Image 1 (tube, one colour):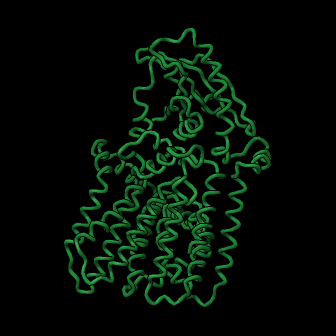
Image 2 (cartoon, one colour):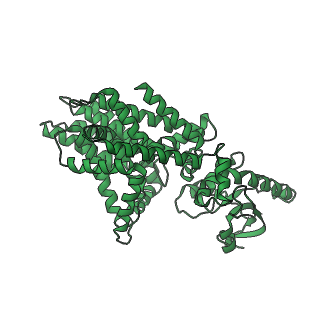
Length: 491
């Protein structure tokens, strides 16, 4: 077991060091610099992860440090679950290797262990809750004290992502069903578990009460807002999910779930398939009216891994496995080489002839930051003799995109936090930056060439000057840094 865990940890640490920081990761890092009870977009768990990581390290490890360890812990839990399964005939070493390569060959599932996203906390605590539920199935009587631990584990999952509410509830329903089938009636266990989960989630309740339940309303609108009915959206979601999980594994998993959906004699099957099918039904309902993100289904695959190993290892033909391993390995290599910012970057990025296209959203920031720093210093020197006493000594930097504010703050940490002028109602930056825009004080605003041409968002700015920026390796993409003054309401 230790060999696979060590290899898994080292691989994820390596990827965490070389993959560029995505917009979402930079955003969550920004959360970690301004800790709150919860946030508009997600529960607070991911901010604790990035905040703790940035306390010990800088750079990419200062964002992603905990994810490789959580992924390795999840793999260890899976291996332990397989060892404890009654009647599972496959040899221990074979089941471990099969499980490890199943993870390795699933690009979306594997890469999550190298990125600072809330999914890893969700997966680990959901899996711990499922594992503990499986243990409880074989006990003669469930005590209220055991309900405390059970509710704590499932409640902790919801501190990372709202997926935990339907999935954790389904695990609880599965355990209740299995106990009632055995003639066991243990109301105090389930009442205690529910109360423990509610207490663990107190930061979430507190923040939402203070903000008119903004996070719950946002998630409801984000996932189930009214849209136009279309069968294209579910087909797109299925195709995208198959690609990020691996088409062979996706097909085999779906077929086994379909065959076993009515199975109620095996506790692992009940406790695994109930939350997975609940999640699938919710996403299928949402997908009929609007596009959904394919990675929303990944928690189902993550917690189902022990069950999948048990089911798929018993198949007589394993040819699908070669295709899965080949597909997953090829995709991981291509993704790593394409996004690698180390020595290969000097060969790959220039190959785009100054226009990396969509990749620029994650490749431009390391090149943009030094250019910005130099221009901001020049303007600060020019403004020094006319700066008003009420204004900041350093020139504030702002953007009209939340991801631009996050990516730039990550690279310009010696300056005050980069402001986001994007109107997101109860969004994170609206609350963090409240009161930081000082009337009649100068500020610099980073715009794309299109935004500058359309004068997007400049109605409240008195423009004092502008500088067109040329970014190395991104020469065909134009950026404009505007020097302006925030107008007073009367002006």
